[in-house]
Image 1 (cartoon, rainbow, N blue to C red):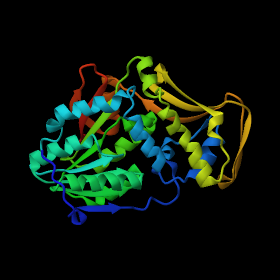
Image 2 (cartoon, helix red, strand yellow; image 1 turned 90 degrees about the vertical axis):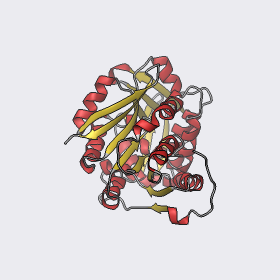
Image 3 (cartoon, one colour; image 1 turned 180 degrees about the horizontal axis):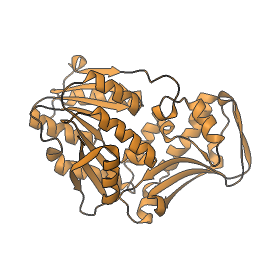
Length: 341
């Protein structure tokens, strides 16, 4: 589809900032950084929620990770979308509202947007992301590039956004969850999020979800520990964020980055490892944390799946697989699921 630039975008672009639920429930996404730091760094072993990796700097670094030669998920998923987007968006009499969880720069999503515009002429796209900066930049670019596209961005965590979407957008919906983002969730949390989503969708709605597949450890570990060190900087950025927002005195250079595939858990685990005994003051969380040499902070997981694991995940979450697409090497898989009625 040819791209036509236009400056008349105001009426086709809006940004919503819904309020999170009260109470600071960690599972709602409303937990503050300070309470998450207190909860995670007083636990044994120490850990931090990966959603706090994605401040403005973290989101920019993640976009750089996606461009690294070792990081196959982005280019593999993009190739699948390039070849199969038409099938993925087909099946409605009118254009569904396309809602994307964790939209980032929306680069790959352009494949789906273009396919939907070809099929339905007009489209309403609703990107959801915690980074307001990257969401606004990508939304403005999209409405400039596609005159038949309306964009309503939602600056929010997933749970809050789903409540807003349920109230605000009637008619058929296609929820898009790309980049194997679900892989960052532990199994029970993934099921809880997907069940919440399935309960929010009607019979005519669909979920399009991209998930990485189990493969050899060398390929997986290289993808999450690139030679240029971008993923290491991305993970250490959480310490810089804690310094900035909670007046802490972490020295990121005193922590080494490690990514290891754990076959029995079907996941890559990312950690920051203290290279010496050290004490870190975190006044904004009311903490002083002692680290032994070699002690780690678990900062992120990336779960990998097999077709059998995916069938089980769909069933436990209230979905039924309607279609799937993969690359020739079976590295990555995109599924379209419908709510189980």
